[in-house]
Image 1: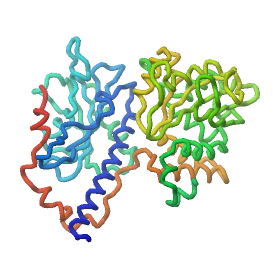
Image 2: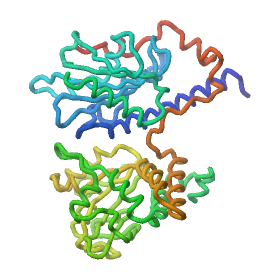
Image 3: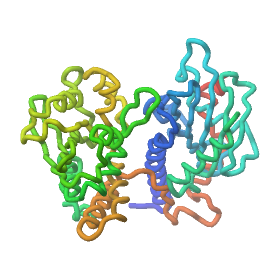
Image 4: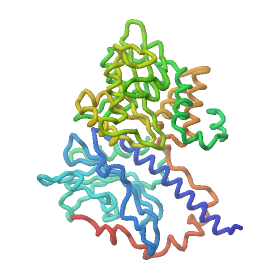
Length: 177
Length: 261
C-alpha cells in the first residue's frame, strides 16, 4: 500500500525533521560563541506565530531564532535566525546578526528586541552576497541603533567552526560602528 | 550494552533510562586518566556567571587547589553515594599526594528535569551536601574542593537559577554550581581520542560513538538530504507545486503585524 509521490513526500518530511534537529543543535551551540556573559532574550523559545487552526495554508514554522543579550554591554545582542519558508527564498537561509538596540529609559532588551528583527533586516535589504557582513540601516526602526548582518545558505554550513568564522567576520566588520 | 548500541542493537526501555545512560558512560570513562578526558570535560562545565566573568569549573577548581587537573594521579568514581541531603548520581574524587582533593558531584538527567523545588530543590540539596562532605557514604575526603554539576541534554540555565535561589544566591554559590550537557561529553571523548593510546583510546572512541548513535552531539554541520529527493531541476518534484505557489502568506506579515518601529 504505497505510492511513489507519497513516498517522496514522506522522505521530504523526514528530511525536514532532520533539518530541524540539526538547526536545534545549531541554535543552542550558538550560545558558546557569545563573547560575553549573556542571557537568551526569548528564553528557550525558538519560534512563534504558528497557527494551530484547522483552516490554514500550512502548519510549518517559517523560521527559528535565538537572541543573546550581553550582560556587560547594555543593548548589545548577537542573534541567529534560520529562515525556512518565505516567498522569496529558494533555499533555507542562515542569518547571523550583531545588533545594538536603543534601550529607552526604564525599558529592557527583552522589551525592545523583537524575535523577527534579523529576518526583517535581511528581507528589507537586497543584493546580499553570501558570507559578506553588511551594515543594515534601519531608519524606520529607531529602537535599533546599528545592525550588522551576515547571510549564507543554511546547507553551505558544514561545521560549527564555520559559524564561528562568520561571527568573527561579523564582529570585525561592525567594530567601531 | 554500549557496544551493542553502537551497532544498533538495544532495548528500547533501557534507552530512556538515565541511570542506565549514566552508568554506561561513566562506568567506562572512569578508566581514563585525569589528564586527558577530564580536563576538557571540566572546562566545558559552565557556571551561571554573576556579572562580567564567564567561569568554567576547571578554572575554579584550579584556583581552589592551586594545581592543574593533569597533576592528579587517581580518580575514584562513586555511583549513587548516600548523604542526608540526598543521593546524587555520581561523585568523582580526584586525589594526589600533596594536593587538595577535588570532589565533583554530578546529577544526570536525560529527558526529565531536576526534582524538588524550594527547600527540596535537588541541586540546592547537593550544594548543601558538598558543604558537609563528611556526611557522604562511602566516605570521601572532607577537605576537598567541591562543585555540583548538572548534566542534561537540554539547556538547564533556568533550573540552575531556581536552585541558586533555593540555596542562597551568591557569588561563591554561582562558582560552585555548573551545567554541562551530554553533548559536551561526546565532544570531549572525541577530542580525547587523539591524545590517548591503547585501551584508553578505545574507551574514548566507544563513548564518543555511543553518544553519537544516541544523537547526543553538538551541531556537526547540516545533514545532506537524501539524494533521491533531488530530481534534475533541483526541486523536490512532489513538492514543486507547493513551493512555487506565489501567494504563500507570510505569517510574519499577517500574524506578527510586520516590522516593529
